[in-house]
Image (cartoon, rainbow, N blue to C red; front, top):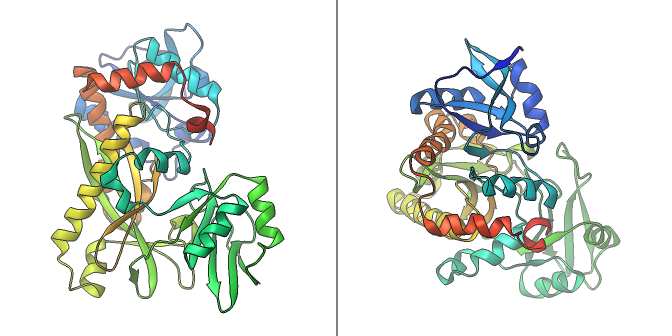
Length: 394
């Protein structure tokens, strides 16, 4: 690593990263984040990607120390704070949100400005669109009374942290004989590999579940009637991104299959990845593949466009979508920081690379044209005034 000042002829586009990724960049050990793809895309679109953290930007500064690629290696350089920034970091507090919002007031474009909205808040936003409601599972805050009510309506429920990722902390509650069975992780670690079950009559929730609901913010959701592959439930990761023309587009669709005797499809929890075409051909030959894909793509674009009109400058989403045995899409959840490596694991290298290139194509669009719609500018300005506590902290 070396330090210097900016001598690059091309403009910089910022990639905002967290501490762990930032420290890994000069070592070339970025694991799941293929930062070289950003560099390739930057060369294609005529700018230099630079990687930095939110704390690297000092108040009132006009430059920031960032990692840039020079002669095949990443070096630290002082560069002008970019006018266009892609947020690939996750923050949890209003302090960071206000800092990002202050960049907007200074005239910068930050897309995926905030990407850590609670699941319940996203559900609330999507329910505002009547055409999306048939695709949304019944979901409530997991209070004791709400869980009791949902147990009267459905035979199987999913209880999960409102802001968890990669399957951490998710529990399944299902009717079993005359009572109920709770399946839960032995620990809340992302590396948990041990699952336990607890039988109870159903009149009163077990102490373990009540304690977890009191200690954290959980949601309770009807378990969707997922289609299966080899008798294992599967769902889909759909990458939806804005591209070179500023419009939403589908980058790729990959299937995630739960391990044997498990209900979670997350790769971090042992899920396997494959192409949806293979699943449909083997187990659902009665479905017309073009129609299934068209339905998934149409619904995914509707979700992205609605969120894009409701949340400040969303441009890069990973949607978890289930399909029924009839091929009808149902939304599981929305991820503002898409884990793109599922495409790599499925051998879908073209789509994997495109998940990095498309945001850079959109950055080029913003460099050339600014925001695509006045409505989005208004949303960003409204964000500077502060979003609700429900949106940022729920």
